[in-house]
Image 1 (cartoon, rainbow, N blue to C red):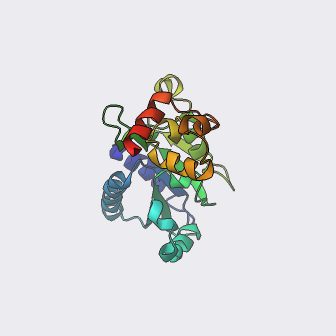
Image 2: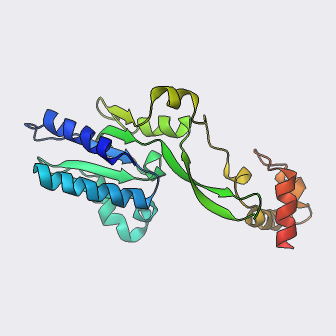
Image 3: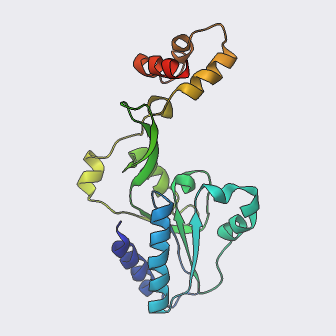
Length: 216
């Protein structure tokens, strides 16, 4: 976690906009709820220490449920005069939720994805680098209605040459048992390998064979 760098970026903009009634809203992309809560605590201490007024939102999958509609409306609304809106979000703000007044994006270029262990055939949540596609989508969250800035918290050379262009589709990363069961309900006359070969991304035959063996 690069919390100190995040705090320095926010402090920089606090200084720049000290006399402004309207403060730039900031969106920070974090890989998971643990990192969101840790960053939240750090920003609360920064707010208390420097006397700023932050309106902090924690955004993850549960925010899209019906019971959180009121919080979602607050998230999309303009902050009160003199307050800075700061959104701590997982991947959900890449595309599922669009906040129009975001001017600054801070991106750790990390994500968490479901991946299958080839030895145990169990799926686990794995921390990994986000792809260029993810990062470009995140950058696009800034400056939708005004000029914006994106900070990527990693060396430029590493970003250009070391992180993946895209993340492999779920069908090639996760267990296939549920996919096969759904496929059999649609194509009962076909064997799993046949209908899985109709997919845009075809999983390895060995994964299909293992899933059929486990399911059986």
